[in-house]
Image (cartoon, rainbow, N blue to C red; front, side):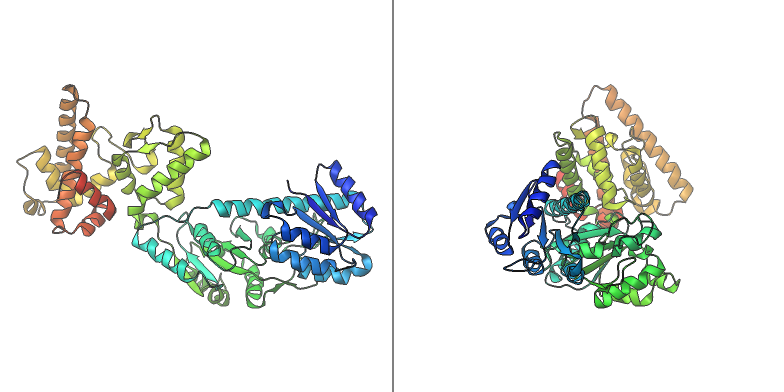
Length: 506
């Protein structure tokens, strides 16, 4: 752990704090004036700076407030505790305006001082974890046109501090977009603070956002900074903003208007410089019509709107995302990454993924742990992705497509005397269901015959025939237009191009 820097011209204060922190196994480094602190900071690498800074407010050669202002330039997320005499409380208010974590009145109670410093250390470590996660967050993945539109929008917004509203279904990656907007913005060196307004009880949300003063309510034993203060100089991400309680929306509107707010139980306005990015899966226009979301707040948030596509709208990305998440899961678990067969990928590309990218990521974690072999096959996929009738080799989703669009091709494979495509289109739905049952029975009989023959490539033989007939049938209905055929089949255009090449259907 990095040391706690103590700055005070009084040697006895430095000595007492050093010994008390040493007993708590907290390393320290002491300075008698702010000039020496600034000199040390100018030569220190990023990983050699202080964990927190504890500074007196009145010292020769520069005040603690001046030191605070200069330190915040290089370390905007560094917690700074200002020590002050009771007569300096007006200056302490100025310290909070300058971004101080807390003030420590002199003469102070030593155990309470140590408790405050330890709380600041915990805050500092949370900031470090947040920064580490930001560094480790990969660039967003996606080749689908809808995702390319999102990437272009992030690029256009890279030099802007404008408020952004991200819309999209749950699990589609709205927070990842918010982090990308922060990472590529002028505020990239500042903190990124995220809060899910739907996950915090109504009674606690106000304190979480704006902080509270000591004694503001039962259990508020110390002053606490809220998320707006924590995000000062950076970005605050308000997830699920559509679920924010109506009475808090007024307070949020004021912060967005003038950058000022009051802590719960506070009487002095706190100013913050924060870029707000909000996200919701709800239709805010309808929420406004229903009277549960303020119209003026909606317009304040809806400066730039980014719509994030659902995973089912970007199926060509499923293959890339699956392989990426399998690599990530393996790294997290310290195991060899598993591979996934083309047949299993086809299954996944045909699944709707109501939970979007988050569901796919969780699925890959499950496969990393539960799949029995290094190569993941369709039979290894969990039931929720719709795998059924593995003996026939056809998922339910694909079988449904067969009834509507590709039944003639399969009937031709199972029974050569089946009616041609044009004649088949005039059959009734009952005849279609009967034909599908005949095809399934024929395929099952052929599979049993091949299995009894001793062949060891039955899966590949039947899968290739199935995929070939299905793709050819789709291309026949679209007069050879591949993108339209892929859309009708419910797969990505990259997938159909790859399959055409693999199956020699050119």
